[in-house]
Length: 484
Image (cartoon, rainbow, N blue to C red; front, side, top):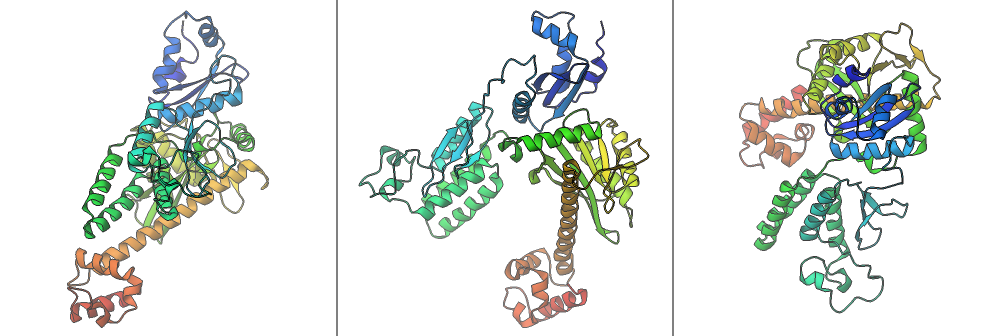
């Protein structure tokens, strides 16, 4: 017997996410997570009967299906937990009793400690997580203990220092703060390293360590340089889950109500957990960039922002530029490089919406919800609807969409300026006869910017090795002619 939801199941992505079964009135019956949404949900309809009466009754009662794509299976665990706690679905037995995933906490003290906790509180400490896999958490703690040891004891350090540190110091697992063997500044630097690691900023942490390694090697401190080298290697070997930064904060009731309001207002099939915002920026058709910004749970997540240099459009044509950028963005999603959102927001009016929707249709994503928000009148345009949707300026749902739109505009303008400045730094200096990539890099490292170089006299440039009087004169003259 064919179930009415099987056609919808065939269109689910083969990617991680959370699925929701609804009854005929829209009530959530069950929330589940999946490594592959299509495979997991399809398994419910492969049998006419189930050994479990609960599952049999669930499939018989389900009349609709919605889903939320997540970036990883770990993120799906978090989203599933929060949706179950909010909806309290009848067929969900687990996760209803307030189970929480663990956080790592760095305490608010002169010499902070590292703790594992399942409850966040407003105590001044810094929390990172939640962590959904105990194995990942243990590997991370072992790496911290070996390379960035923080104290774990609750010794009161406000009084006199101890004569000798505990055995953990002898094992290299503690800096010996209790005995005054490390300064507060040195300890604070280690805490900063741990925070970068916990927040997933491994690249920034590696760069900090690399600079210290170079200084140690220059100062002939070869043992310290070797230790830092080993730390860097361990960091690159570490493979741990990546959770969106917004998931480290509990979803408050106000945000939950806002997302539900937006879902109802736009007729979305599921809660807009993730919203993608698009905009285009250029200067008279030059240095054209398109961007996609990401809001999760009503908050921006800059780690997921993407910037695209427009390639196929010449002159001033924002519409086709938007079509290109939307197509490139969601082609990556279909290839598994990016997660799909629950709502796409375009900065513009009905024409921008038409071109963006056309790009989605070309990829077979006609059902992906998309709207555009025009400036000035703040009107919402929806596909297939002639008249725009006008909301009061005080409406929280409109204000959320405005924040997404304004953030996409800000990021687009910043991307355009960055691209323009990069072109100026690269081409203007490298086009000067006698200045190649190496000399251009040397000039920029020493003076900081082309604007600074243009303000100097030629003889000031000759202080650098390899820059003769004639080359210096050509550099200054070229930059001033370009009016950089």
